[in-house]
Structures are given as structure tokens and as C-alpha cells.
Length: 319
DNA sequence: TAGGCCATCTGGTCCT
DNA sequence: AGGACCAGATGGCCTA
Image 1: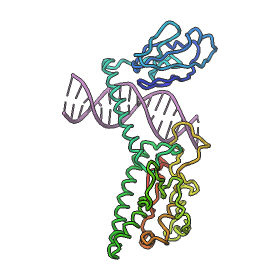
Image 2 (image 1 turned 45 degrees about the horizontal axis):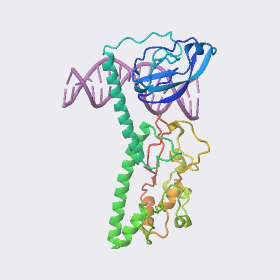
Image 3 (image 1 turned 180 degrees about the horizontal axis):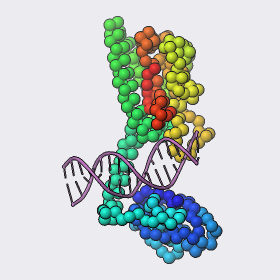
Image 4 (image 1 turned 90 degrees about the horizontal axis):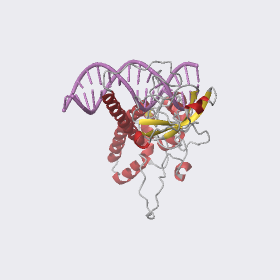
């Protein structure tokens, strides 16, 4: 089966075509591209019952067919591939040139749509990096929706916290503590050198704050007891796997088994941030609010229980 | 090999 | 009339 190629795409692909098959044909749907075959038909016929050769796809503008074994290949998906016993599709009522223009516009439209989806993926948390699988279209939309919901809830929560603290008349300390709770980097007390990009102390990406590491961590079992739920089973994931989006159903392209996950955003690390009772009054308040009110603990994702799309990462959630 | 995901083609419909 | 949008059909690629 010949591989479909996109307009303007230029690449070499290796295909298997049975000997004796006439690979020449009219360029139908992909009139914008031309496929060149490096072997002549006679050479292909002499190479056995099944041969492997490379074809190159170039644009019409810079490719000229010649008699040295270069043949046009019909790239349409519905007939004339490895076996030409299928009949060509019926002629469309739309003239061919119009049809091609419509198809091209539709392709462009879909490319724009995919570009917008890509830009959406870019702003979703923890969906980037070489080890993170590309989110599917559906996952991207669901995750974006849940991310918005989560941010909205977080905003409300922070407003409530600010309200609590304003009653205690400690506005300056509160704001600083609030920024710490929300993960915003504090202003450095020492000016950074020009040209040196400071690393975030609180980034979930493997950069750990030494101060955070020194803090006592609330074990997951404590959370389970407090909330009456089992975090592990509620999430449907192994907490040992700290890459929430390493969902193999979203893999595009070969996986690198030796490629260690760069993102380390385990539940423990989240609890370390959320549940620490010491050193930070705000965090303590947030912690107690969460647990005493049965309030939510923010987690970066959950897996859908949809029967159609099981185990799809869909964004941030609260438990 | 089945299922998920995707790109593309295609015809229909709506809008300008 | 032509373009945008939509949904169904089809087939390829990839993973489990």
C-alpha cells in the first residue's frame, strides 16, 4: 500500500510493491505532488516477487518525470496500490480542478484547526517535554476544559483565603505567603546576574527546593484516612509513576524506552506543597480547610472512566 | 491482530 | 457562486 503524502511534503519513503504491478498511473487526488520511483519497471520486475525500493515525493514545480525510470504513481487511497484489480472510483460531479481546490482548502482548514489544537496543548500544564506523549485531540479539549475549571476553583479558593487573612490584619505577610502557596516564585532578595536565567525553586520539573525537601511530608495514607478515599484507586494510577500524562494510548511515533521522564509531579510532591503544617501559616490554613471541610485536594490530572476512551488523561481535578 | 487516533477525501448544507 | 463548515467514509500508522 502506498503511503499517503501531504501537499508539498518532500521525503523519501520505502515501500513494498509486488513485481509486475504497473506503478504508473494518473495522478488523481494528489495532483499537487509527484512521486518518483528510483527503479524502472523493468528493474522492479527483475527484483523478485516482492521488492522494496524508495520513492521520493516532490512538488510538481521542482520535479520532472523522465524516461530513466521515473513514473507517476497514483496516491489515491481507493485504488491502484499494490493490487490494481480494484476499479477506479466513479467520477465526481464536481469538476476535477474544482474538486482539487476544495480538497486543498479543506486540508488547509484542518491544518489550521490542528495548529490551534497544538497551541492549546502548549499552554496546558505538563503537556510538554520530550518524554510527554502528545495529547490526543479529545484529551486536549477535555484537559483544557478541566484546567479552566481547576483554575476557576483555585481562584475562588485563594479569594477565600485572602478574605480569611484580611480579617487577621496581616496583609503584607499574607500576600507573600499567598504567592508561595500559589506557586509563584518570590522576588529574589539578591539581584540575579544579568543573562542568568534563574531556575524556579518550585518547578515540578525535577528542580526541587531544598527547603521543601526538608519539610515533613504528609503521607498519602494520612490523606486517605482523612478523606475517606484511597488516592491510588481514586486516580486509577500507580502513584509510583510520577508522569501523569505518560499514557501510551497517546503515543505518536516510536517510544524511547531509555528516555527517562523529565516531569516529576507525584502526589507526594503535591501533598508536600499542599499539606505541610509547618513554617507557613497560609499553607496550614489551606490544609485545614481542605481536610476539615472535606474540601478538594488539587491534583494535576485524572483518568477518564469513559468506556470509549479509557485511561485518557483529561486534566486537573480535585479529590 | 484489534483498536485508537489521525489525515484526507467527499458530498451536503449554510452563509456571505 | 464560492467559501466555510460539518460529518461520514476510508485507509494508514502505531501500540498493546
